[in-house]
Length: 140
Image 1: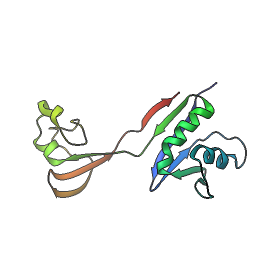
Image 2 (image 1 turned 90 degrees about the vertical axis):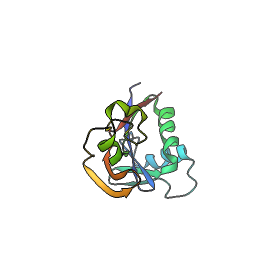
Image 3 (image 1 turned 45 degrees about the vertical axis):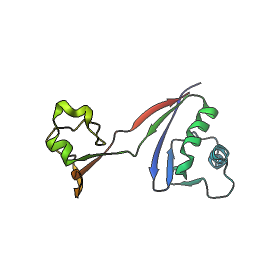
Image 4 (image 1 turned 120 degrees about the vertical axis):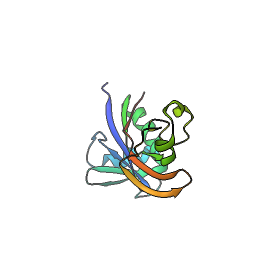
């Protein structure tokens, strides 16, 4: 049995599921609906080649895909890394392991924020953000 790959990404209150295996026209509604225990129309949606379900159903979909198709490679998008000015400006590289910032010390003492600055005046100073790399994992 081959490994299928699906991409999962948040979109507001819904999770997008890309590259769901094709099993016939309209079958995705039934397949995903069974996985999440859908009790009403609209819980599973399809538009522009993308399936969506409510965000709380993400784990059920991933586990359901593994149960149905065997081993599944999941590429999960959507994270944001945050770093504050006190980390990149004042932090000393040798203290990176003590960093309480969401960058987990990767930006500690670098002297440079991430590319996007979103606010200032917080407890740690200016806040900068960047999209995190996709998380790839296998579900047996």
